[in-house]
Image 1 (cartoon, rainbow, N blue to C red):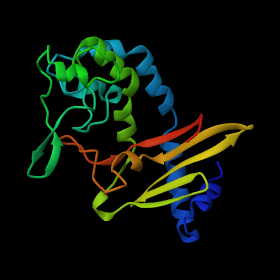
Image 2: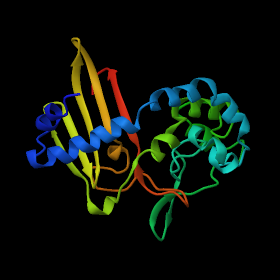
Image 3: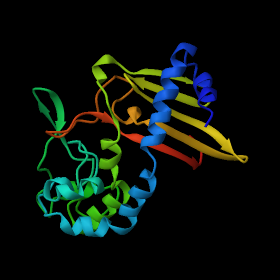
Length: 225
C-alpha cells in the first residue's frame, strides 16, 4: 500500500511519515487473519453466542472468558444488547449504566433496537443479529494499541484522505481506486471510533480490567468514503 500517497494527500508533515509508516506496517502485521477470524464467528457462531448469554448478561466474556476473542469490544458503551442504551450522569461524567433493559416488555428498549427492529435487545434473536454485526471486535481490541485521549488527537484531512494520530497509534481512512473500482481504505488503529472530533468527548469507555485501546483495523473494500 502506498502510505506516502495518503499521508501527503491529507497534509501530514513529512517529519511524521516514518513514525506513521512504522505504525501502519505494525497494524498490517497484527491484523493478519483478523478479517477471517471475525467473519468466521459472525457467520457461524452468532447463534451459539446468543444462546450462551443469560438474559441479564452484559457480554459474552462475563460468562465465557475462554471465548473472549468471539466477543464485542470490552467497553461499557458496547454491550451484548447493543450500543444504544441510555446514559446516566456519574461523578466522571455521562456513562451508559449497566443493567439496562432488564424488563422483557420494555417498549423503550424495543424502540431503541435499530439492528433488529421490533425485538427486545436482550432477546436471543436480537443478540444473534448484534453479534453477527460485531463479533470478534474483542480480538481487534486485544491486538490494538493503548491510547491516552487526554494527550489529544491530531487530524489531517484533504484530497479524499483523513489521517488520525494519538500517541503511537495512526489511522488512515481514504478514498482510492483498485483497477478503476472505487474503494475505501481503512487501515491502522481505530482512533476515529474512540472519540468525537467535534468536541473531543471520549465515546469508548473500558469495562473494569480493560484499558482504552485503538483496535487494529485493516480493510480495503468497494465503496465511497
